[in-house]
Amino acid sequence: MMMVFGWFVRKVNLLDDHSTAQINKFVFRTLLPALLFMDLSTADFVKVWDSKLVVFCMTVTLMSVAIAFLYSIFHKDKSERGEIIQASYRSSAAILGIAFVKNIYGEATMAGLMIVGTVPIYNIIAVITLSLTSPDKSNIKSGKQLFVTTMKGIITNPIILGIVAGIIWSLLKIPQPVILSKSVSYLANMATPLSLIALGASFKIEDVKGKVPLTLGIVFIKLILFCALFLPVAVKFGFRDEKLIAILVMLGSATTGSCFVMSKNFGHKGSITAFSVMLTTLCSAFTLTMWLFILKTLNYI
Image 1: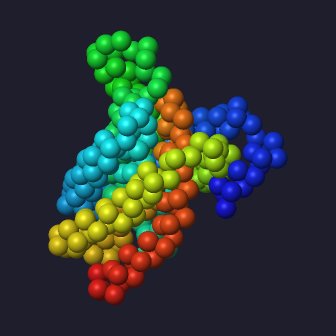
Image 2: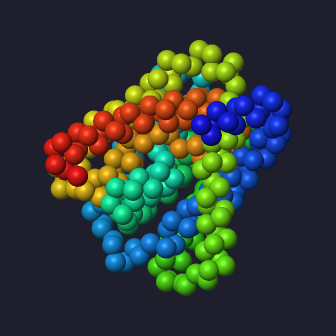
């Protein structure tokens, strides 16, 4: 509904291309880092740390990226491969993960650990792939310059800075005054709705003509294939209940709206990403329910 609302306000000229671009930049540079900082800075990682879960999440994420890369090779336009890779592997781990696990189990500590194992990799891989495939990289003449630009993009990425700040804050057990926690929570709570509104406002039907089969492939990979491949492995490793739900969110949730924000910030058109976010968000309501039903029926959760 937020995406449809964004599309509507664009149609009635309450938003234009410039204002939508500014909103995307604002979400990317301030709201998403605030959301990640809020989630991670309040988690007690020393108490709930589970190396097995974190390593599993990291390994599966890297394998998912490899599968997404293989799928992107079949697309002829190399400048769009970065969007395909990111939209195929990157889940709403931070935005959806905390809320999803908390609604089922009342706490979201395992979702926090899953975020530690996945979100840094999500963002590092996204920066690398979007940089290497960016239409704006024509002014970079040497491999060394491209490497420097990519590393600078990773180090200065606001989302990664938000993650690092949140983890350090948590490990050092720095107290948060009410005025700080309230202010950060206000910013964090705006991240999801505002990014979805901007995504809807940026979406143009003419941009996705001919992209439907490609996007349906992304939807299948994101919502079905990863879960079918890796959930049985997670069960075999002994993950149950809250940990298994966190893994399910990592594997089978919709492509996160921040993908679109990030792709636009790296000079990509973003049409494939926007279409992928829309379709996976719509379909995930049914596929996540299906996976939850299967896990519940088998008494794994």
